[in-house]
Image (cartoon, rainbow over all chains, first blue to last red; front, top):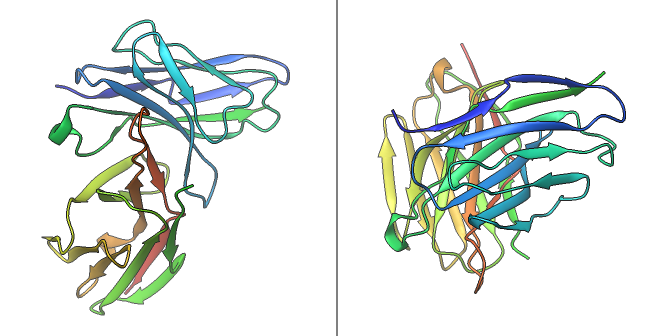
Length: 115
Length: 114
């Protein structure tokens, strides 16, 4: 079945530690996105990529980094520079082919907690 | 900068009642989306609205779009407890040379009371 897989589902980070969240899709979608959601809040865009080896900052990119070495994969690293990383992280993907750009499909999310 | 505002942010309603959630956006866009999120879960796509006057219905939910007013509504008819969730609208930002991002509203947390 096609879809987006995020892992892990739960992640705990110590102060000063970098952690990487995985996002893989087998939908053959061009664009991939990372969003952050805080309790009771909407989604805020961290980074997005519309093509391999290229990505753009979203609204809250500071303290995060990404890579897009393969079309299927868009990992997010939460660095020690991100001072308040506890949140729910959602990965999404879309096709960019004209009328096929209809909606974003979301992964199941990763809940990151600083301990 | 595209801004998307939803209201109300919180909504408690009795089973069997009708209500409407509103989504206003600030700049021209050609697609509006409604998503549902259950606590601790990901987002589930409900509706995609592509043109002015578009109306879509699924069960007790009906969504409409007025691009001239930059307004979408999500109408709930005869609410049932299973509809309790947070509902988000999202608008596609069109800007030349960039990927087509979605900008989300803050969400409406709906609680349907027995």
